[in-house]
Image (cartoon, rainbow, N blue to C red; front, side, top):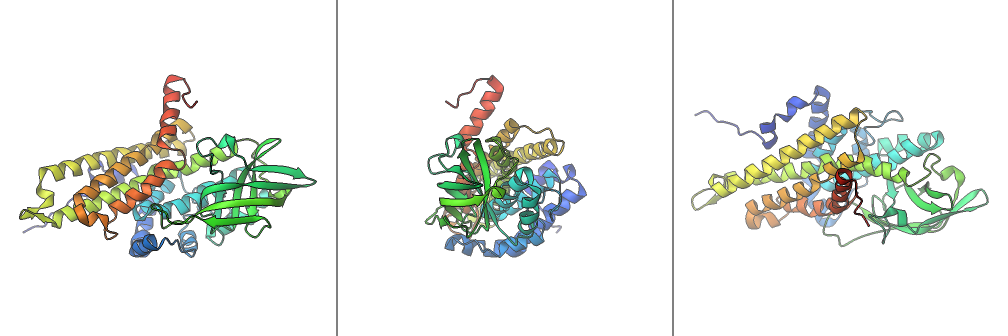
Length: 390
């Protein structure tokens, strides 16, 4: 008897035909790394709330850190390749993609886009290699969706700057060798590079998390932190500076969340094929197949949207409103993870299976880099011309 191999969910959309050979190779290489190095350990890391620092060098060796940037030891790939790598990383766990996103699209990009040549030379090669870790301090305890209201302040003191304030929910904060910190000044919002060990600069990791457990999330505390003017990002002169970095990071999320959805769906299909209910495979029931079909459709639609946005970004034509549209992929991915869990039944609440872990993680991804509500309002404003934020 000839054995017929069932297609993977995305095979029905022939996604590979839309990719170049280089893009397929980058996706495959990243997936192999996730399968061989990350996936075997993720249950333990998630349970123990651990993110091994040495993973940074592994990501660096693979060329994943700042991979879409040019020069300074960065790989210089196109946006689609970066997105596909994010998808494969998040298929392992959102914590892996979050680390790479924060390192490359927030920490490194803020220096790459707004920093001086001296700052770029000092930090980007080390960050690209994973020899140093960066974080991005914008969000505050009372200011997430409205960063313009931040209370962290920087005041001039002779030739120096003195920073005071608190940043919250900062990925990589407790690991970081350098933090990009945004602060109000008399001249508007400015960015500063704050190296670990600077007097007055401390971090506190946030524990007892139910989500993104294989990721370090921290509070940054700045108490009369004195910095020379050379620590200021000279190109950033307004809130446009940090917001441009957020758009870079959101682009990775557009792809990344779909990796969690794909892995959840694949886990549910594999389980349904072997689990017998009333003497027949669970996969043979119509309601199960309806769930699988619906999840596959939503996953494929999300990937097609992500690819289109990637092509627009590579052509230099993507807009913030389009990125907001793509960020809603997280909402659909979360629903896929939740539905996949229902197919697993009671087994789905254990770490042996990935969907509920992915769903827990996606609850955070749904919120950070702009909540779904804020992105829906951005889309609504683009389509109606009326701002509903206030």
